[in-house]
Image (cartoon, rainbow, N blue to C red):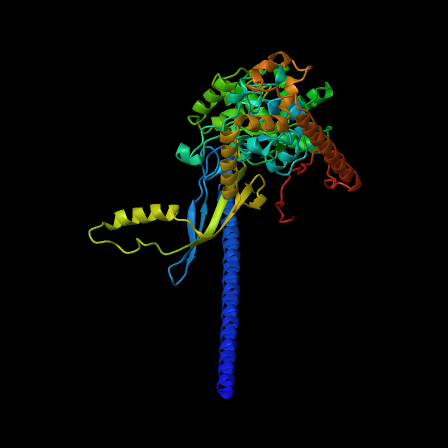
Length: 562
């Protein structure tokens, strides 16, 4: 009996050892399989990033090949999708452009936006979501920016409004120039969630604040060839330099020997040329009122040593909201400009003075725009998606289905099919110089998901307690200042009181939050200024008077330098 019991115990022990060994083996197999899957995923993601970078280079080459058309103010086209290779299994390595912006286009002009590094206080204040000169001044004080996303570090600029998750409150909406002119609606009507893209069948009717802004607006300071196509692409003659033999030769090359004496006489008279506006005013003082002659002169000369004219807005591609931010242009005139610009002749597109030719504004009114506008976009934003596309289920041709019909269906389904191991890059391509460069590149693979999650969170918070959401948003944007005793709108406070509670300014919690934000903003600004003082700033290489200087910003320079 004892022997049998001992044998039973040994058998049980052996079984336990076998089970434990099996568990250990299974665990090792699972671990190895997980590591193999992780390695495959990492490899695929690395391959996808390489595909995306190939797409960046390809799109850059396509845009650069059409640089001459851009200098003429013409439109360009790029491929929307291409297959780099196909594996034996049928899996394809695909790169494609993702539609962006309110119009859902594959190419978005950066020059058609307002440059936050160079726009005036009044221009910034006129934009929905900024709305006041105080907030615009904070943006100016925080310059320079290297991306529009950095605006969220400015006090009063809220990410939900910047990205368009909610409409700008009425005091900061379109057409409001400041608190003194704002008209406050009731709190229950001031905040509305912006519907998703799907609800608009793929497009948004109104751009969000981030769609209107840029930091990449560099118009090359070269001639458009208005006087002669042979001069297109040549550097303009800088009039804002002392008279010299070199300058004299430049005048002679541009207009001939007879023009040298005329220009020398102007210099001797003390006439100054410090801006395009001043240039046009001086030309008119000479008795020249012909718009065509003025257009040729403005195209041939410049008043700065900048190789690129920074911050100009392309009126051929700017949205109505961006156009309305320019001085002298209201919403009605902006719509007229948009309606007319697509019908312009090739010659008219060479200069923004077509606004005068078409009778939209007078020459006197154009003076306000002379240093702010252009008709060329040399910086383009693209969103590049790369990944792998599995063989489609429709690859075989069903009986009775025409080949052309099947190919069309396959093409449509391929464009909509999601990519495996997807990687997305947001890229700004700059072809303002003859050698193109990538001015900005950021991976935004998870951006769409993050935006949808944030939009859902905003919608839920508004539906649960809209007034509490509004109170928090207004406080974060500093709009509770409008209800202070010093504000011109203090008498309208009753209009924005809660239905069963006190006004926005009553709670010490809101005041404390505003004070804390102001202190943090001041500390960040002081620290930033201290760093700028401690670190020597790179100066441009010494040049002769009048030599062009490159003051562009961006990730890569034309020569490949970081």
